[in-house]
Length: 332
Image 1: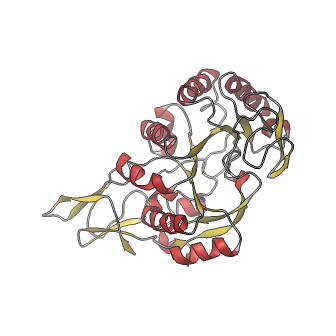
Image 2: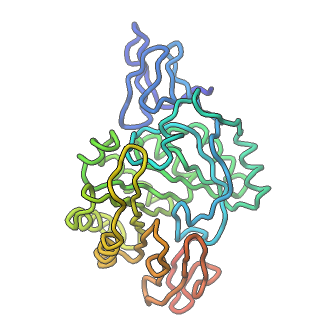
Image 3: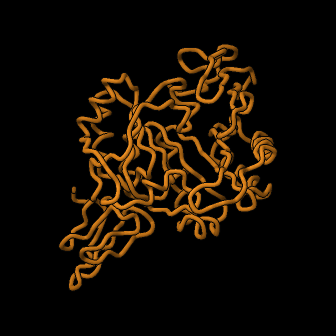
């Protein structure tokens, strides 16, 4: 355990703590944990139960995150713990995200050992992923600081549900993020994730000023697939920057949700809509090379072809620029 950051004593007489890490701001009684099940009130002090506790780790293609415009074609060390501050009914990693620390086998991996593991495997970065890394805050912050000292990059794959103060404290050490924008309806977040939309939008707005960001939207039939919602979301993203890569991802039945898989036609329509305002729009969870090809946002020439997680560089220079017109395309 490690003493948590970002909390206050809410009721001194009863010893109740208010956690300030994420917008849920749980009121936690002595001996109890917050919504994410990873932060416990012990004698009126808040502790992280998951510091250096790793449920999953391995070398992954960076395209799996998905990140298409940050060190494309590389393998990155990916680390995950347990728990989440959402309870998405369609979660693919529910066996760890919805678990309690006592119910899952974990390994101890100190920040120092994580750095050693990354260097040993020639990883250019450490990616905090699988479950929600923002509730792993203390470990991610310590590891990210140490990674920077060792000239490694830091990547977050996150739901973006965090309060402003901890986010801004962490961002100087983060180089890239994929932020999951589950829907552009607050009612969707409330019903299917037990969260809310506005903090996620705030995270996107703030984070893009600090690091490279890409956005993923899982399209679920009948829930968040209307053309009006997609247009509204795309308009908002493009108002920030037309260069933010957007990944539409195909839903498959999982966990507590048994809706039919997303039709390919729905994904293609979403991509068509988004390409009217955004330079880089992709479709994930399908094996379609054209839907995942990177074209230059300026001259439209083909630069990177993808089949699954395999890439072929056909027009990208070593400095991340288009070889045909010099437009900056990816971060290297």
